[in-house]
Length: 499
Ligand code: GLN
Image (cartoon, rainbow, N blue to C red):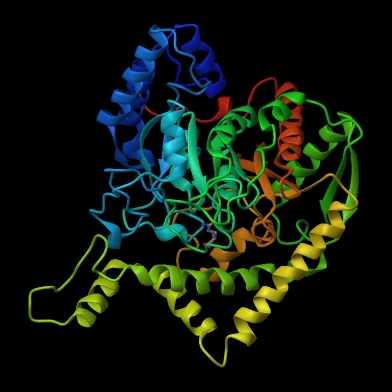
C-alpha cells in the first residue's frame, strides 16, 4: 500500500490507526525522492538518519500509548532558509556552504516537538531573492507539471517537492510572494500568515520587516494543520505577536461562506494577466457566489507603487542583513592564506560567495540607504507602505476577505526571464502588497489555464490576525472546485518516475 499520494490529514489518520508506521512513511518518501528528484531537484540535502530517528521515536511513543500531535510521523520538506541544528543550511548560497547551524529555528523546534519528520532541506533562490529558483547557487528546481518550466520562487524546492509527491508538507518563507507564487505555479497550497504570527528566530534574514514563514501543502486543511504547529508567540522574536493563534483548522473545515463579502481588487487583474489565469480566476469567483458569498469590487489605487517600493525596502534591509556574511562568522572564506588582511579576505569571499542577483540587491539597497538619497528612496518607499495599508483598510471595510489571481502568468520556461530582472520582479505584482501591509495571504489552485494546461493560483487575503478567514474561504472554494472537477487538481499532476 502506498501513502505518498495521500494528504497529510489522511496520513495522520492512517498513522493514528497504525495502518502505517512513521518509519515506513519516511522510507516511502525517501524512495520516491530517489526515484524522481534527479529530474525535479527539489532537495539540496536529505537527512535520512535524522528523519528515521525521529520517525522511530514517534512510532515508539505511539506504541507506548502516548498522546501525540496530529502531525506526528508525517514527513515534511524544509526550505533551506531555516536553521536546523547540525544540518547544512545554505540559503541557496555558496557563501553559506558548509555551515551547520548550532541551533534550531523556532519553527524547527516546534516541528520536532510535534513529531513531524523533517526529510531534508529544499532548494531556493539565493537568500530568497527571486521568483523562479533559478538564482540558487546549486542549480534550478524543475516544475513537476512540466520539467522545462520554473517551479516559482524563491521557495520553488518546497512547492515542487509537494507537487512531485516527495513530501506532503513543506515550510516556505514569504517576503514578497515566495510561498504563494510557487504554490500558484505548482498547483499546491501556500499560506503567508499575518506578519508576526510565525517566529522568525532562526530564519536567515532577507528583509526583516517583510519576512514571514508559513505552511505549504497540497490541501487547505493540511496547510491549516501545519499552521497550528508552527504559529504562536515566541519571546526570541521581538516582532512575534503575543495573542492566541486563530483556529485555522476549524476554519478550513467550515465549508461555509454564506453571507461573506468577498472583495475583488480591481487593480490586481485584467491587463497584464494571462487570459487563462483570468478565466480560471473568474470561474472560481462563480463557485464562491454559488456557495453563498457576495462579490464586491474594491479599488486599491496605491498598489500601483507597491512593486517599486518593495524593490527599495527589500534590498535596503537585505544590504544591512547580509553584511554579517563577512568571511569570519559563517561558511565560505576565500584567500585566507596569511598574505592578506581581513578586509581583502572579506571582499574576496563576498565576491566569490554571492551570486549576481544578491550582489545587485546589495548594491541597490546600499544606494537607497546612502545619505542624501535615504529620504528620496527608502523614505518614500516607507510612505508608500503606509498608503498601501490604508488602501487595505478601506477595502476591508467593504469586504471580509480580498481576492486576486496569485501570479499574472502560469509557470514560464526555465531561462525565459533569467536575464531580465524587471520581468522577473513583475511576477510578484499581486503578492507584494500583502507583505507590505503585514496581512495574511493564501494561494490555492483554481484549475489549469486553457492555453498551456498549467496550474493557476487563486489568492485570498485576510486582515491582520484574522488568518482564519482566508482558511474558511479557501477550504470552501477548494471543496467546491473539487466537486466540480470530480477530483483534486493535484490528482491530475503528471506522475513522474517509475512508480
Ligand atoms: N520574488 C520576490 C523577490 O525576489 C519575493 C521573494 C520572497 O518572497 N522571498 O524579492
